[in-house]
Length: 295
Image 1 (cartoon, rainbow, N blue to C red):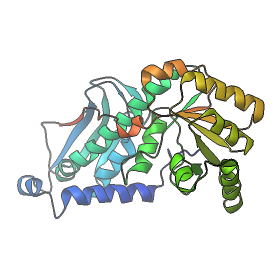
Image 2 (image 1 turned 135 degrees about the vertical axis):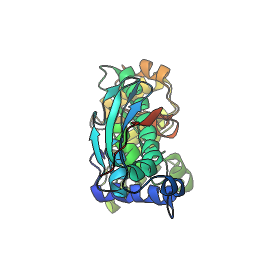
Image 3 (image 1 turned 180 degrees about the vertical axis):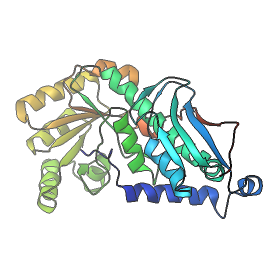
Image 4 (image 1 turned 45 degrees about the horizontal axis):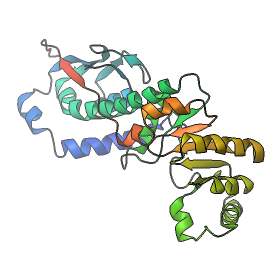
């Protein structure tokens, strides 16, 4: 498992520049027409609903990419639990840069704070359980690194980043490679281990027979896909009997209501795609002061 909370600065700048190019294009026509280039102003980024904040460094980068003279004073850091009306950051600098970057910066903070808030709800539901919450690869194309950072801000953990840093033998692999025959899972794990000895191997299991086969094959992780709580309890017992080193991950349409009943099953992980693919945006705004100044 990985932790992408510490995003390399060059990656962050590249993502921000792409977003600004999409929105600004050849120039912010309205702002260029109405705002003198020497006008300076200040404003506050404020949340209008309770949330867990994420994306503050991204917002700062948006404004400083537009004009390095912009000063962003963050009042809170990623992972902070905030209430409606709380100020997240105070901005000051050239009015053109603040107006041009407003929507791009807010889009990032709203989206990423939505993910962090959704993640925190699942983490809170697990309570003191040793079972940990994982994200998935069900992310917005191009924004995976940022969205995985938002998951960690909400208290979750990152699953594999992509197809390159962990092996996951899923049901479609089994179907296409015809792994359903006796010994198929064992051969698949052995082949993957031989070709990629440095990678962890996870096997998706739809049945308890597949769980048993994956355990005997010495898979590092076993994904319990769409199993009932009763089936997962049996899977935990099998793991404890056959291969204590294997880690068990439950997945498949897991809701907040259901996670409460899973906290005591003895699972190592629960992965939830909804914390990224279905998270809503938080209502966050940028309000400008009425007073402006000129150098």
